[in-house]
Image (tube, rainbow, N blue to C red; front, top):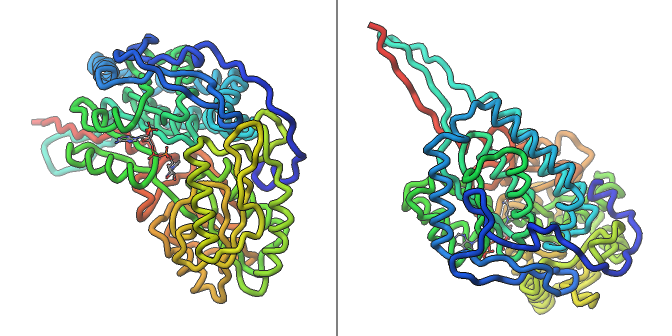
Length: 502
Ligand code: NAP
């Protein structure tokens, strides 16, 4: 289902209790192929955002657990149980992982939905399906990590090889736990690395199920490890650990900048997929009916907790009032509610913290002169962290809700008069992850997309993503690319071998 199609779904039904798979309910660390409690013995609650109730508890790792996980990963690198398999052998295992993800799709979707508050429909057709696609895509590439022979005047045979980096620390945010961990883990494993994964504290559950799935697929003990626990307590230790060879981080610009500095000080490569605040430019020549569906999907998908969402709508002035009128009615009709109901399009925010943050931005926008076109308040439902999809007009470009990453179901709408002004407004925040434009002019599509400061630009669409198409940030949205061959490249290094022939 596309985000546009999702707009036509009907209203939701009440919440049913959730029963999680055993390995998830046990909530232990996965180190060296074994499930274990943290050395510190403490556990942390994981909440179901749709009810505000505890859905599981997980072990809170301490630095000794990080050391054990890194040691297990390093031992697996050293003895070559994974790193020295052929690409074809690794490919078979990763393809099997993709097949098991598909077989266990309902379990994964249920876990992801009850952990993050995602509508079950999207958890199935977006999160789980994308994770399986990612494993399949990199499995094919694992077989093609070739070097090349270099022609030189030396009396020598010179060639290059692609080698894994060693131990990869994969640190992920709360909003797309399964997809964003798979992005890193699949690519790292395909290239022959071993991984220590630290998922977000608020949404650690699918990482545990993936440990079981990867083991069942044939990933040897020690090659994939999961430590659940607080990034504040564990993060610096993991990032600076002398036996970690690369850091793959997705999260906020603030923490990403700290992680990149620490990795840099320790001379480790880092990919940093950070915050976003994309503009969606709606030109008067666009197919308005289709564009409105795209606009709404782009800001309500995943309750707006989408780094590549479209929270800033720029509308060409002749259609500005018309668009506000359509949005007022259409956004009020988005089905918000119980994520387990297949008809739900938007669930709760992932945590009370997120809810408070979003509500704070909306109050700030009102105080700054913004007019709430629709929404603008919490939704009291089953004790969950719900906020109504919200549209705000009349804000200046310097308002916090325009310039900063709200990360909730909030759309700001600004008019523009010329193409140049639209581009200037679109590029006016510190972020540069995604951008989009809706237009019927192919010339304009080329002209404008070339000038937008973003790692990915969508034309007459939003969030069309695929493991073959790279994404990543410019400016404060970070560096490095995930997806595509570019992703695998960042998990390898080149070795040159020069053999004298005389
Ligand atoms: P976050 O607060 O930056 O946390 C991200 C991860 O970093 C979590 O696992 C967190 O652990 C961990 N962490 C915290 N302190 C750390 C430290 N000192 N060292 C190492 N790791 C540390 O981000 P979030 O709130 O979970 O996620 C939302 C943000 O992610 C938004 O800004 C969003 O735009 C961004 N995002 C970007 C992309 C992209 O592809 N560019 C995709 C998705 C999300 P704890 O959870 O335990 O604090």
